[in-house]
Length: 164
Image 1 (cartoon, rainbow, N blue to C red):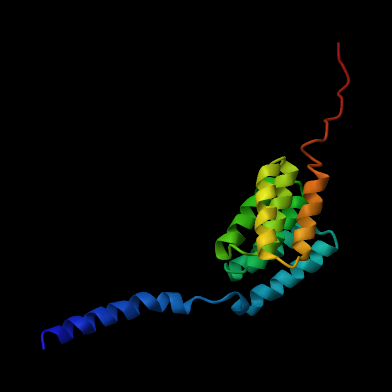
Image 2: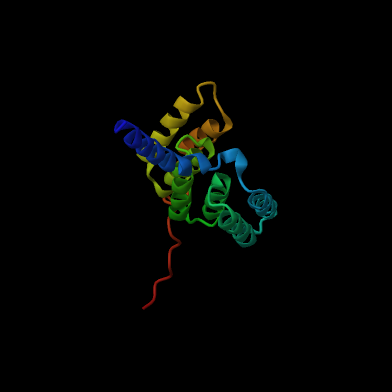
């Protein structure tokens, strides 16, 4: 008889702790408005309107912070603007939501290549090889970037004219 209240209390505590985990949305349950804003951002990105695209992606994230694709898309915009540190930060956000997001790993690896961090990019390539045993477009994309090497980090600054 004395055991029953304790068992009920423990069961109630367990249900209370499990409720927030059950309430989290999976990736396929991204809010429709967020997905719509992301789609608009991709169209803007394709037309070369990077600032407008970034605004649309940020609006998508404000609508639903679990939209991994929007983080990766912001990272792609950042890469186009040569903001590789920002690209890495955005892909880190996506990888916190899903550590096995192949798009985020590939985009992050490309940004690392551009910064000259080839060993870290190689680690991303290894992770992609494990994820995509049969091959995937992200794997080929990162392999190409690594074999090409950094384009910005190796670029030499323009010679400035001497002044007397």
